[in-house]
Length: 525
Image (cartoon, rainbow, N blue to C red; front, side, top):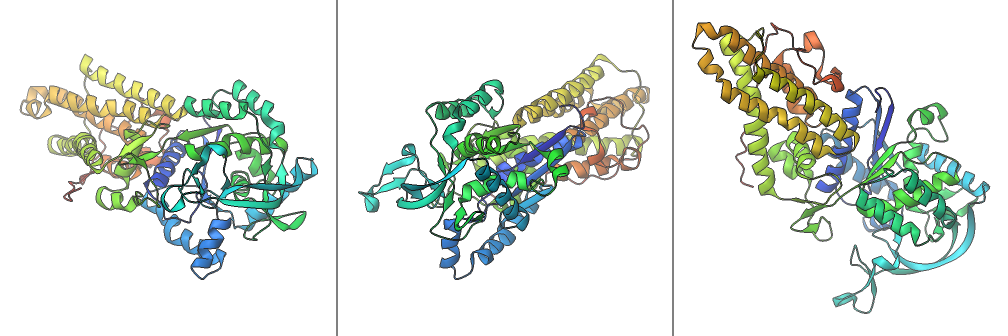
């Protein structure tokens, strides 16, 4: 995208009734990395995350714990969700909670607008409802119960009995937007990504849309319908509005115009809400639809999607306490093609940590710095004339930077990391071939030694910049060791789309000590 353009990106708005597991962490670090990349590339970036705090499930959980719903969500958010961002080194610009006044008040503004435009009507509704999903279930997600639930209809996702609800509700005329949505998917083929998700959405909408129940009248933990205080707005519909209320909808027109529309990254299980219901609501309100919806795959543990009810959820701290936040971020973003399901295993994480981070990137950094210190008293040497081998490294760096930026543009994070890693592999091979330790033994090879070590140090400079959105901690340490803050500025100030340019590292820069970026992990995993 052109530098300076607005890049607004959101995580799903998380339901905080469960503690975060590595799946929540995966989504969050992916969005954070995309936002960091664009921010450092000079785009007007804004990253939003937050919590969806209304609904029947939250009301029941609070009652079971003997506290008010607000006390319950405050405890969950403060004890589990804010710490997640710190654990994973997430640099979000905002965190919205749907119980905040800035959200509740402007959700009412939005719905009054839909009501006044004739898109909402009163009616009666009877359907099977899953409290776990906070959703009236479509036939495709209703199955016959077995064992203790034999004879009952259960939710295909939660395997728990569904409740038959009969209520007077308000409805949104979703059925009127079938043709406009199909036209959107046709004219904007990248509106839903990846292609498998797009095909699923097109198929779903092509079968016809039913009007959507958008209020509940049997409990009061929610945002009141502005024209009828006996109803609260359906939790999912209230939640979707966070993406607009957080950037000023209804309150700050200038901020809203600057940020909206944005990109949404969601798990594929909530794709319908984001790619069908949300754009239809925006169309009804006369607002721009999102720039795009990207549905990533599930993280599988032992072949199953992680779930608290099945005890397959793993807390992010179980990984970061052993390997650190950078390794967490690197592993999930590089080992899984973004958009596809991916399997997590401790063995794979441990092997990649050792081979790619400790022995690959970490060892390259430590031995380059050590050789500059040993052979040139810590001052980055001046390169002499470049050979074909040196020029080949320069090309690898330039090509990798361009390829990584193009991959990030397409939300292909694993491809971006693969492109950057060609620099790590090329430099390690270059050191083996050029044997700087042998060159150092011959005074006649002094200039050649300087060229080789300048090439390695300048390659590290490019790597630090390109990897900083993925691994902010280790690249920050490397940047300090390279000693370039005084001459080039801080790592986050480096223009990312120029990272592949050659000759940026000033000759004579004094390098400093570098502790191991990825220390040996003694724990058995």
